[in-house]
Length: 386
Image (cartoon, rainbow, N blue to C red; front, side, top):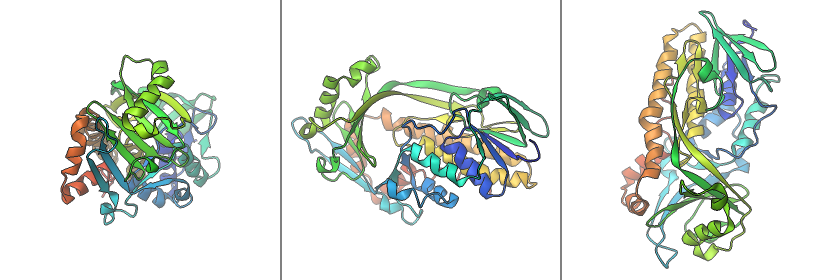
């Protein structure tokens, strides 16, 4: 009821829960409405970048999570040449970011491990499950949301963190520019430690030949091999044993008989909301943006949305002008339009054959700039009120 809840959050994913916790830590009364009956267990985002680690530490949930993840200190690029496993190489040590963050590394852990930690840190009863938003009304004093379980909730502001297919964006009348990338992704899982196969590999590597690439990501219990597949290939054909083995043999010929413990195919979409705000309704995370998965930036950008929005709402609810919310909305939209989408698009649009040479040619200053951008240190605090 209005008077008890100051902010309603739709969606109990990592962005919605991070926002709820950041608001709670600032003393605000928050309620989260989630359409599922529990937290999602789907395998989705898996990369946490340095400024997001800083944010999780600020929220008080990082320490118990770090031991179960994979720390990645170095990124490898390697050319695969015909008849040879080892070609030209390049690498960047993320330790060069040590002066800018307490966590100069990437951290790999499943999103499904992050959300329970965020939920556990919230006051009991903060999240109402089985309560997807079905209706929205707002006036000069607040926002009213009706949920699928028949309940009605009122607060001064509402934030849609309910994903690209969530209800809030449409109910608030906010449009979106959306498209699907032409390619889909084949993901193979293996328990084989690929550090024993690729010299110099730490926890993240990109292998290239003249026509394509293979990404290697170390996770706590396995390695992921990521391949782009042709738009005309069916999911079944992409996951077929013969095709999977041919892809492995192309980039890792000495490990072509590795155990494959899992496989799937997923599509990749691109989206940007036309605004982050409609009156007292705001958007964050997938409800506002979707990017190519290369670089693992989208969930991180959503958590940055949450942290900057929490600080802004704290000021506005404390009596500062409401225009601060529009300043925040404009700033975060500009991040997506001018940096996030162009940056992720560029990682899949260039020539694979040129990637290693381009990375190898970077000067020390160039490496630092690349690492800052890849780690999102230049974007995370945009929109934070001063």
